[in-house]
Image 1 (cartoon, one colour):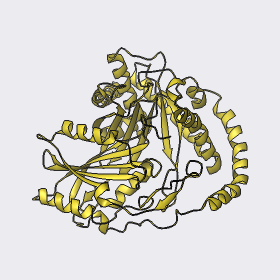
Image 2 (spheres, rainbow, N blue to C red):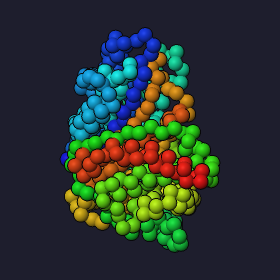
Image 3 (tube, rainbow, N blue to C red):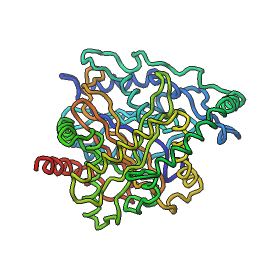
Length: 439
């Protein structure tokens, strides 16, 4: 699905507090350590196999790693504020990846004000998804502030030969799975009939998605908007309203998007729909992607924030029950069915001209409930940067970390102007929901 306008890589910006008494030498030592040896598990020691069959039977192949290429050291101009950091990371994220090399980059960024530094990590979506990125982060970091090991000194499973499969073995695996796939198709067909009936049907919602200011052709250039919310405030609303933390988060995003459309005189005629991914269970050694999802109307046409959150809760409750009732094979087929038109449209260059199936993606993942450290440097915040499809010019990813909720908006620089306003509006939407719940 990779195109020049819509590259399929993910990014993550992490900001850290330097340990007490440490300065530039700490960062120089970190840079030398990071580039001295591989510190990532498979498939990051592999590159995509090149050849005539690579498009129809993609595979990884082991290769040598040029650590000087993959690990970079940058410094911010003074004053080293959030604006300078955002401008640098936006430029780094706008560059496509080199498919002849392992698909990752790690950028150490010094000069951040208030004695802080940042790490920007970038990887292609074919190698990792959001939940996999959270697991990888927890391999790098520790909850022990006194642990002085570098990432390369931890017990990281290194790239091996498990991913080296011949075309014959891949085809044999497909044949073995044919029976399961046939049974899954039967279950999926009956489930789709059930999912298309009644109030809160996400299948019907996807077929009735309105056009919006966020559904425009994209360029490769990106903007990043970030916000940090207090988890305790969101949990208090969850308890008061009798909904989940994720429902409150979706309602906050909904309020911010509604405000943005009103300010830009671009209010859609109907509620906007979000595509909401759900991470699936996976083995400890499973890499790649394991995700399903559903389309959730965000009630952006509703002025009352309490009505918005209750409508969202009704949809998410039903949708999660429907997805969890499917077998793993049927769920995989459901996911592929939803991705098929996006894949076909992007590959053929027609996606931005097709009616939208949703307006933007909202992902919500949890990192940890306690602070994490990198050789004594405390992780302050983590902001995800996800992919954009052509015709889908914004993506929202929310990460729960310790007592914070870190919200990252990634958007096309041309299609979504003043993106940072959306991040500001999330704070105002939280306050609006609190006032409504208290009244």
